[in-house]
Image (cartoon, rainbow, N blue to C red; front, side):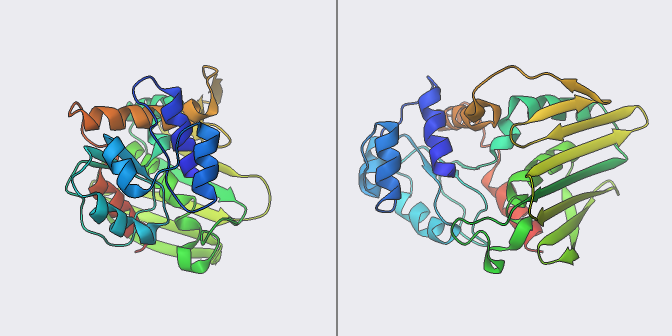
Amino acid sequence: MAATMHAEAVLKTRAATLVGVGGRAGSGDALAAAAGVPCLDLESLIKASDALVIASPPASVPELVVAIGERVRALLIESPLPPSMATPTIPAMTAANLLHSPAVRSGLAEIAKMKPHHLQLRSAQPRPTWGAHGTDGHGGPLLDPGARLLPVLLAAASTSAVGAEQNEVGSADDRSISINLADGRTIDMRSSWADGPTYAELEAADAGGVVQISFFPFPRLEIDGRAIEPEEIPPVQSLGFVNQIERLVRVANGDAEPWLAFASGQGIRALLDH
């Protein structure tokens, strides 16, 4: 699913050209055919590319990064990252597409003007059915969807996380994490696997007002109860995938730093595994 969105994002931007797709037999072939590009093995992808997107199961990522080495200019690695792996020797971004969403960026800019005494992110979705995501071994709801959402919560806090406590709210399918910040505040994220509609909302409040960012099915912004109507753009742009690829291009050209940085992605995984 993530690979499909990344491929579509490359096709939607003039900043990059999709030269090929690689992957498991069946899924890799199908995506390559849908995108109108060849299905290539890893060596061929490396030789043809300036930058690579890795959207593979976390356990396979370290071996891929070692095989790639320094033969491309930059990497984008889908989250969640593996629990531990060596830092790539080339610039590497951790995928956090929602950080690049236009509506989310607008919401974060509004929160930056505030002094929030309340900062919380809540989400619920049906138990995932793809791969190992819906199993206890994959980490539960704190990793999916939490690994995609926590970067936005930390960006809204505008400070470093210094400690975390996890709690099972009602069951293993309903988890929460409280993060202690360097300035003494605490922020909270609650993620659940539950039947019913998927939702995720970040809420920030101070004495002057409330900002709410909702993420699914597409990011939306609300300020003091007033919906800010977004520009009508394709989902792959609304969800931040296109802007994320364009950032990767700038990183590969030496014109920008990775965002979300690989080290930050490792830190988020450590918080979620705490």
